[in-house]
Amino acid sequence: MNTTIKIYIGLLLLLICSSCNKDFFDQVPDDRLQIDDIFKRRTTTEQYLANVYNRIRSQMDWRFDNSFEGLSDDVDITYNDMAPFQLNIGNWDRNTGAFNRWGHYYQGIRSASFFIQHVDENPEVPQQEKTKWKAEARFLRAYFYANLMMQYGPVILMPDVPLEPDATLEEISIPRNTYDECVAYVVNEINTAIPDLPTTPVSTREWGRINQGMALAFKSRVLLYAASPLFNGNTEYADFKNLDGTVLINQQYDMNKWKLAADAAKEMIDFGQYSLYIERDANGAVKPFESLKNVHLTDWNSEVIMARVSDNFGPDKMGSPRNVGGWSAFGPTQQLVDAFFMANGRPITDGASGYSESGTTSQQTNYYASGTSNMYVGREPRFYVAITFNLSKWLNNDRGSNNQPVTIQMYSGGNSGLYTGRNYSRTGYGARKMVHPSSTLEPDRIQGRLEVQLRLAEVYLNYVEALNEYDPNHADILKYLNMIRERAGIPQYGTAEDNLPIPADKDAMRDAIHQERRVELCFENLRFFDTRRWKIAPDTDGGDFYGMNIEATTSADFSQRTVFETRQWKDKQYLWNIVQDELNKNRNLVENPGW
Image (tube, rainbow, N blue to C red):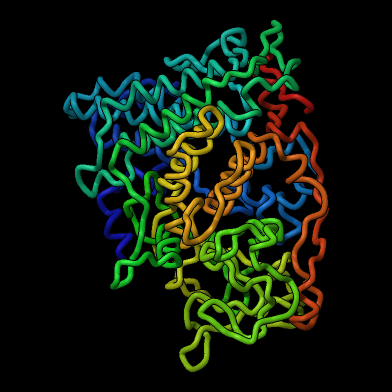
């Protein structure tokens, strides 16, 4: 039994609910005798709460279940017969409901509300514990609403007491609330829940259950999104209204929203229960590669705030190249590759960075073999953690000779390049960031570990982004941005010995923060929403997308920027469409703009 399984024996039904009858727990409570029995026994009540938790979606299978990475400008999903490819090239069928989460999260909201309404009826659970459980369900309800808002914008705030199954059409035809009303509700729910949540897990059985740190961190994300250009005074949504004329996106820009976001992030930082995960050598120096790799592989380390149990088949199988048994299905784009800094901390567009696309290196390192293109030489540690490139060395010695790691060949005819089958990367790159070096493939033996969904580095980046918008000279901007860079093993802004200049003004700092966020948090299901909330998606998510020349049969010819796909962007894609079935159920529900 591996370590992760041992750890989660204690969680039992709280996060792993596959043994539960989902139809039973998801049912509309129209069978009063059966549903009321749930709240007569501790076991069934806790099972019901486990089912509410189970609405937290995995973010790891970018092909089918959660393809926001595959729909971002960071990643290509290899297969043309899957929804991400069709959506990226503009083949949106608003009635098919690909990756449509409207119904999923509203079922979770209803279940959470029903639990809050009835848990006090249970005679077997002490009141203090029932109070904590209600706080967990209250946060989960807010979490579900916030995820809907990320995807759809303003949503419908349902009555806290669920509607009866025999409610009339008039009763269920509830219009959308304004986005500001939704934010206020979610933040109030989180704030209400926090005092009744534990500060830290009291035992291994509590790991994974909602605590104060999770609530504070997620609140910082909600308020950051609310302050961002898509929702903060976006005049392009002036005609986005309910049927009664209510404007759903506030047309007045409010600088104070950035302050609220910064304050929320700082509150989480000052909470003091978390720290950046850092591994050090015998002399106390930071080991960047190991720190950045293992922050996702070491369960409940000091940086992990929110996580869920996952089979992790997605990152290991789809992120690994073919010659080690993977499917090469997750292909980072050249745009993402170009975003990583050089080892001297400078972007590749900086003339002082030393970046070159000419020639190859005669040297070999732990990361790549001799003959590697110079475009991959001298890059920052996060690049080598995240990206598999041509002639890079694999993560372990599996299938290598003389106990040496195998070298990955991404060109046509190479051990992981174009061939007659379908398991090759169309970009010429692979996503290795979350791949566990102890997993083996063919047969698949996936190393158990958590799926990290929220970590402290995101909160730091939330903080500096918000702070830069309303107080651009604040010392904390450099402090926390440089903490991210120090752990990443690259020079910090403003340090004399590295001669790395501080970004010149608010706009330059904003660009630096955005780039840092893209690199630090790549493959963590945030980039899709970031380009939208910043309103830069027309520039980032449409047009020609580049990789390497995967049809080339030599490394030299392979190392040429080549268009692998031309993506379509329409402004209606800022918000997801609501499928017609949902619109038919609610005559006061208006569709998102452009759909």
